[in-house]
Amino acid sequence: MPEGPEIRREADRIERVLTGRTLVHVELTLPHLQPFATSLIGTTVTSIDTHGKALLTRFSDGRTLYSHNQLYGKWYVCRRDRPPATRRSLRVGLHTETHSALLMSASTIELLDADALAAFPPIARLGPDVLSAALSWRDVAARLNEPDFAGRSLGALYLDQHFIAGIGNYLRSEILFAAGLHPAERPRLLSRSEIGALARATLVISQRAYATAGVTNREPWIARLKRQGLTRRHWRFAVFDRAGAPCHACGATIERIEVGTRRLYLCPGCQPSRPVVSRPK
DNA sequence: GCTGCATGATGAA
DNA sequence: TCATCCTGCAGCA
Image (tube, rainbow, N blue to C red; front, side):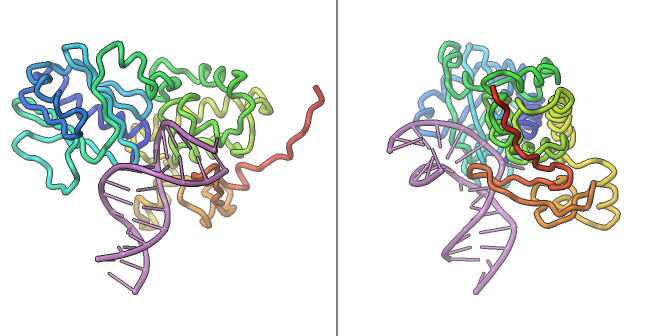
């Protein structure tokens, strides 16, 4: 169940065995793609790109394989003679002489030429990739202040892939906690320094998740929890999945609320909800 | 063995 | 806002 940082790590692993290599065998098991499998044999993989949670495998003939893991997709990378022991159903198999990249379970997969890719709604709709090196915290701050986004609640904004692509349900909770902001807040009502803190937290927490394979909690707190003998499940997040437990920063009890249909966790001490002040125009 | 939930996203109303 | 799709698995008998 991946968010942008986990997808990028999968892409890194695939990149190591496929980029620059020629495909000698290709499997595409979804019915609408099956006829195209043979046509990819002999092409070279030119790059593995990601945009948010979308993974793009580019081939030397100009086509691109779009895949989205949704909740259950998973890429396996292995030596070609050592396929993984799994009962999952194979959706894509890309094989070089020596290695394989196998996409299991995912169901949102398309093979697109350059024109089709440019017009492909799931890609065209995405905002900037949260892990892009070209995205600075100032860019994020500027985006928060854009009219399309400034009036919306942070809770809604931070799951919207058109705002920033790659943030998912756990990053949302973790970013808002790190910024000390309640999900009901709206960018328009935040101070300049609060916008700055939020923009920085957006990038810092996402980059931390990438570097650590999904751990967003702060290092000193992790160390303390590890000393208590707790497992990753218990020290991975600062607030996500911790309803009823004490906040590492202030000791207040972490709360779980529903935003739309998704759960969101927050610390009422660190992320106080302020009364909405109505301003006359 | 069964049930419900899940780090996701879309389209209709 | 709701219903729906996709699949795997933790938790519980």
